Amino acid sequence: MGIDLLLLNTHPDYGKPLEAADADHLGPSACKEVERLLSHRPEHQPTPLLSLAVLACELGVRSIHMKDEGHRLGLGSFKALGAGYTIVQLVLEEAARCLGREIDVSELNLPEVRAIAGAMTVACATDGNHGRSVAAAARFVGANARIFVHEGVSARRVAAIAELGAEVIRASGTYDDAVAEAVRVCAAEGWTLVSDTSWPGYERVPRLIMQGYTLLMREALQAMVEPPTHVFVQAGVGGLAAAVAGYLVNLFGPNRPVFVVVEPSRAACILESIRAGRPFKIAHGEPTVMAMLECYEPSLIAWRILSRTADAFVAIPDEAAVMAMNRLARPMGSDPAIVAGESGGAGFAGVIRVAGDANQRAAVGFKAHSRILIVNTEGATDPARYEELVGATPSAVLMNRLARRDTSSR
Image 1 (cartoon, helix red, strand yellow):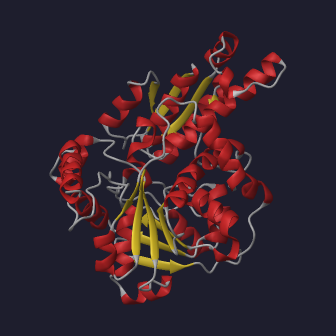
Image 2: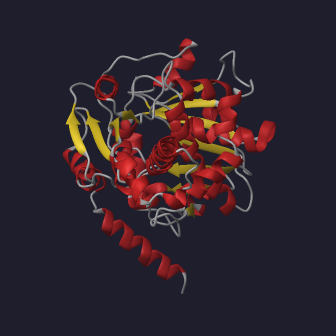
């Protein structure tokens, strides 16, 4: 599949309430706990919400806002939220078990707590961003990290993980193969698996990771004058998309925004699962440029949530993602310049493709009063690849952004 495709949700579970455990972990009160724990990270601060007013006018909608996760915790992607929150939580729980009392996050630097963390090894498979975030979180709490990378992970992304003190372990095949290898080795070595995808019998850690992701939506809604009517979020295994959709359902109930999942047409495992009516592993084909979204089987929790809450699923070709990167780097009029990686602008690309097709536009209910929210899930996490696709360095794009801001303020 290499063309645009929009599929409305016709699954029998569509519209059903979330399961209790999913609802509990993705609601506003759970999100406050995420913010409380992450506030102890020195790099923690809300990421910017940017208005794309010129683009909104061009597409015939009232507003478009982008939550820019390229600045999250100094790691360049939303993944820092999930791993950062989860690993702190796991260390606190292990310390409480070993010391026989409740341990607060303010006690993370106590010698006895650091010693317990130092005896822990956390591990995961990654396309790049999750592994880097796990490595950074492990370093923050004083734990060891082992990160499994598959053949498609670029050398720059591997180096960024190693720079954070993690041991990088090579795995043959695809991301899914790396996940399987991480599961096998963790079981043999007694390491703690911190996977952002889930399967039968393995749900608690991925659910904690998804809980971490809800913070970006809380921040976005707090910064908006009016809530969005439409939210577009890209998906690999679906963790972020499901976290956002679950949070919106918890917060707004039946008055929630229209929610659209965007995937690469070469790795649309959630769209194909909806078509099949069950979680479906698609065949591995030609790699997609959207490397962080190149996943061939949905997370079980994500599937369970999205089959109930997502209104539509959009598959976009690689050229749309590259176009989005370039459009964000060189915006029209007063819109800000934004550095979005190969996967970061996929949701943006989905909006443009849907808005440009009369049938798809009608299917998702785009109107003149529509208020659209999208997420830049990553910055230039591989700067060389970014420059190759955009023809400019990330620093040059950011300088342009500052210059445009200064000019518009005069």
